[in-house]
Length: 210
Image (cartoon, rainbow, N blue to C red; front, side, top):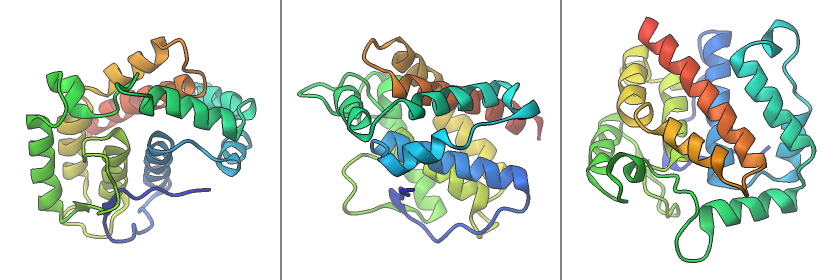
């Protein structure tokens, strides 16, 4: 199973409880899926880990099992081609994965500047070999993973999770998911977007309640 780390950060410590561990793991998986197409090993890993019982009946469980179904019938080559068509393309991308685009209509706008200020406060910076700007959905998911499971409690705490999610993810992530759901060439990534949307909805409620 591949791991994506778009920013320089210390290794995440084990979360304090099973729920936070699961949240951190899911943020990490979403970061990986939206940064690069899944390889055969990751597709197999997803397909083999269906939610069962009561978990399968939840909104998140249903979205997860839909992704499992998609992974079970998608080859590595098909996933790579879908990723290329949707997120790379020739010229203009079909689907943008950057928060600035959904918040302002343009890339590299003020939302990115505000995000960089917060990342600097966390002591995080983009890896030199990563070309995508920090408002890429994969990077934002990885930052949330860090805030959930990082070992610096001055940064990795519930308050910062609430603040970062509400400011940098919640205002636009549903728009991205809807764009993918409606795209005629999205198959595996329609299910990935369904999982992201379901998870973001659960996170929004949970973080507001705490």
